[in-house]
Amino acid sequence: MVAATVVSLAGTARRRQAQAVPVWAAAPGPAAAQDGDVDKKELGDFLRSRRERLHPVDVGLPSGTRRRTPGLRRQEVAVLAHVSVEYYTRLEQGRAPRPSSDVLAGIGGALLLTEAENAHLHELAGTARRKDAVHDRSVRAGMTGLIERLPGAAGFVLSAAFEVLAWNDLAAAVLGNLEGASPSERNLARRAFLPEVAHRTGAEVADLTEFRHHVVAQLRTAAVRYPADPLIRDLVAELRAGSADFDRLWGRHDVQAAPVITKTFRYPGVGPITVECDTLLLPDRDQQLVLYTAVPGSRDAESLELLRMLVAEPVRAG
Image 1 (tube, rainbow, N blue to C red):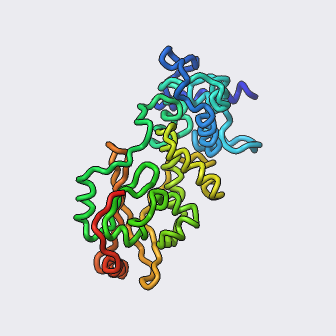
Image 2 (cartoon, rainbow, N blue to C red):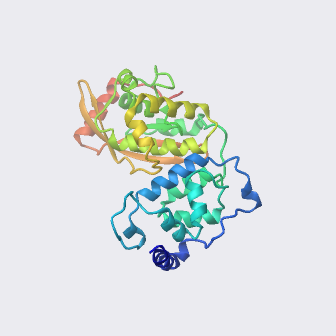
Image 3 (tube, rainbow, N blue to C red):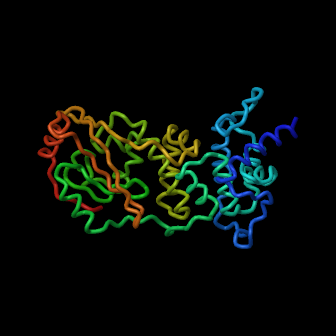
C-alpha cells in the first residue's frame, strides 16, 4: 500500500518538476552547514502549519480514505518537494541542518506557498538577506513634507512595528491623540488588540477583524526579519500575553493577510466615517505610507472635513 502511494506521488512530483529542483539527498553545501541564523522551531512550526492547511486534491492527489489528521502527510510533501521523507520530518521537528535554497524552493512549491510565504520561509531558514539588527524609526524629511501637502487625505508613516512615526493634521483627527501620545500609545497593533490602549486614544474602530489579521501577519514577518530587535520582541510578547485573540492568530503562522480596503471609525458628535485605505511601501526603511481617503462629495468626505476643522495641527514626527 505504501509502495503504491509512493509511485502515485512520484508521478505527481514529475508533473511539478518545473517548480521544484530535484534534490533527493538533503545534505546542504558547506555554506549551509552553519545553523546560527536558523530559527529551527519557528521553521518547523511554519512548515507544519502550511502542510496541515492543504488537501490532497490541492496538489493533484486522490483524496483516498479518511485521514486521522488534517492536511497532507509528511511523506507526500517530501515526494512532491524531491527530498527524503526522513529529512523533511527532521525539518518539521526542528532537528535538521539548514536547508539549501534549492531544497526550500522544492518545499515551497510542494506546499503551494505564496510569494510572501516563500520569502518568510527563506527568512526563517537564514537564506534571505538579513536587514539591520533593529527596525528603522527615523522618517525622511521629504516624507513629512509630502503628507503635509495631502489636504484631502489622512496621511501617516508606519514603522515595521506599527508605530505611527509621522502624521498630518487629518491623520491626527482620524486616529486621535497622536500628539500627546507616547510611542507605545501611537502603536496601532496595541490599539487593535489591547482595549486599555485603544480607550486612551479617543478613536473607536468599528471593524477590526481584517486589520487584526493584517497586523499579526506583518508582525510575524518583522519578528523574523529583526530577531534581535527588543522593541518588536517585547511588543509581540506583550500582545500574546494581553490578547487571547492575538495569541490565537499568532499560532496560525500566517504571513500574508488580505489587504485592508476600508475602515470605519466612530466619533462622538460626528458619527461613523468609512475611509478607503491605500498603502505605499517604503522599502529603504521598511516602513509604510498609509493614506485614508473618502469619496469626494460623500457623507464620509463631509465628516472628514468636519474632523479637519475640529483638529488642525501641523505635521509632527515622533
